[in-house]
Image (cartoon, rainbow, N blue to C red; front, side, top):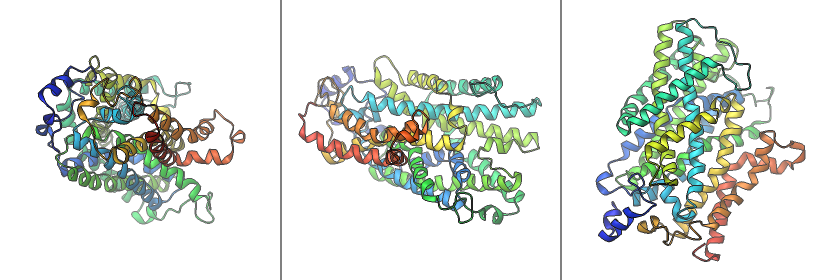
Length: 497
């Protein structure tokens, strides 16, 4: 089934285009537009996985007490797990050519689909802000070297200095310019991004090897959870929430993967490409992060988990500037591809006739500033246990609902024309599916007490320990609960609900 829109009658195609739920960016992709093969999907994941947050992800696990192989294995397992919903949700995009927000209409309703779309979009805004902050911080460090500035930590509530904020806004402006330029500029950046960041990572690895006296000292660093170490016997207490965080790292893309898989030639292409490109690249690039972070412990006597901070220890200004520029370009490419394409579609879905893809991208940028991303990555614990796990608690239930509806309840059959009709079979009750919304709320609810404790809004002693512990498994619990609840409620209710 290569092109669904061509299978519609001429009348249905005209009706679809006249619908208020339709615009060119949300339309099914015809056969002529399906050009992505296995290598295209593998390249996409190699390009997106080889990024600074991947490096920081591995480094943060080292900072939390793991040794190198424990950290890499945790990341690899997390990506193997998230690959399953990634491939399953990609199926509808490839079969019907529809993007993520339209895919959500089948289970959540034509208007209710805005709920998962906006929840996913807001997470993307946070990631957009994080990547923009990394790029802006690199520019700030370049300026500090060139102009011999005295870099001092911020002492205000805002959390950053005026100079850091100016550099952040400058890099943010470059991102907005790329969005304005459109898809051709994005494609160009992606083509040069992967080799740049891989080269930078390998150079850092070579430096770590030389400075630490080979890989022996780096890889022999003990786990803090081993006998006689500060956190002895606490490995699994850390491992399971860390694994949940690793799943949460790509939980966004596991939902909105139809935004990319709609361009696939066949199901085999999207499955093989993703399987080849995601877990192995994440493991490889995370190993670079692990090795360099472990080396900093040997070289400097302190764990430095941010590669920008590692680069500032280089004495040669030319080397530093070239490395920082490469980092900025690579970060820019990843940011646009991973954190703008999908939320732009999601915001466009709110009002298809008024919000274009470009406008949706600008909205993403503004919200990314307001979320103050520098606070999200201020320390390893906040990065994993607050940011990654918290949004996984929301996105896990959405993934469970989508897969339950598409694969189990509908057995992979969708009425494409009805997806664009305000009064069609997916309109349910005034456009909302209360079954899906109920499953979403109930799926996320068990993780709420643990989240409130984690962000210090509740005292840990006032909440049963068992409820607090559920938060460590937020994505898994949310996915499973919402999956079951949706399948139980859907057949019991009237089809219109």
